[in-house]
Amino acid sequence: MIVQESQTVKAELFRKQHLSGKLLVLPNIWDSLGARLLEQVGYKSVATASVATALSNGYLDGEKIPFDQLLKVVRQITSAVSLPVTVDIERGFADSIVQLKENIRMLIENGAIGINIEDSHADHQGLFTIDEQCRKIEGIREVGIQYGVPIVINARTDIFLQKIQENAMEKAIKRGLAFKAAGADCFYPIVLNNYDEISHIISAVKMPVNVLLSKPVSDLERLEKIGVARLSLGPNLLNHALTTMKLIMDGLLRYDSNAFFSRELLPREFLNSLAGN
Image 1 (cartoon, rainbow, N blue to C red):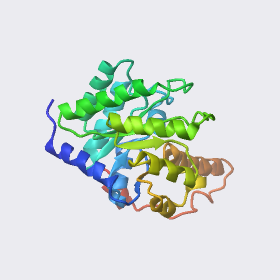
Image 2 (cartoon, one colour; image 1 turned 90 degrees about the horizontal axis):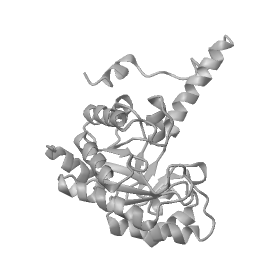
Image 3 (cartoon, helix red, strand yellow; image 1 turned 60 degrees about the vertical axis):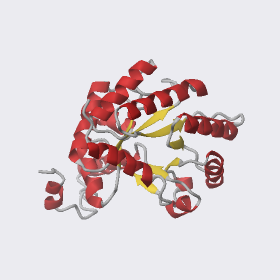
């Protein structure tokens, strides 16, 4: 496999963006148009969202989109922008470490320089053991080294998503430290939405921490101040777009065009610029 030198540079740049002391905001997108929009607006990296990518291609989330189709989306995005691109791969689309490593190889081949990987089972009932998840992370790191792309690993834990009550914070920290030792670059305790608890985890794991934007933790300056390295929107950017479209369409069914004219639209010239031609 031939890896472009620029891909290695992008991976190193993306890693440094987690260590700058500034909040790395990643409005997760699902196609090349969204990626170009991010680049035009001034974002320095691109992240996909598994839910948005799946739904926009006609599939439910949960690794229902065929991996070949996901790779096609990844290639379209990485070919559209000059920015680092990190991909949400859920549990890795693999039932074995061998298959996971092959999938990572193909992601690198299609331009990815980072991944999200989560530690819950496919049905979101229970978690992989720490040893099982660490072997995945070690395998991903091994492939990155093999192909000269220091892939940025965002290791997600679903402890809080699954509402595990008993010693949840202690268990999350234990996982974060183990994932770090296995080679993860960032720890993602998804849906944790309390500033003090987030701060506690950051202090305990001593590595970059990713937070999902939610109303209880919506003060971005405060998140940066307590040391959050990375902020994700998950599928919610797609939800915002579809909510706006539905509002307009519902209005037009009632012969009400107010929502259609409620904001100034982007100029056609700007839209054309996103085509990249």
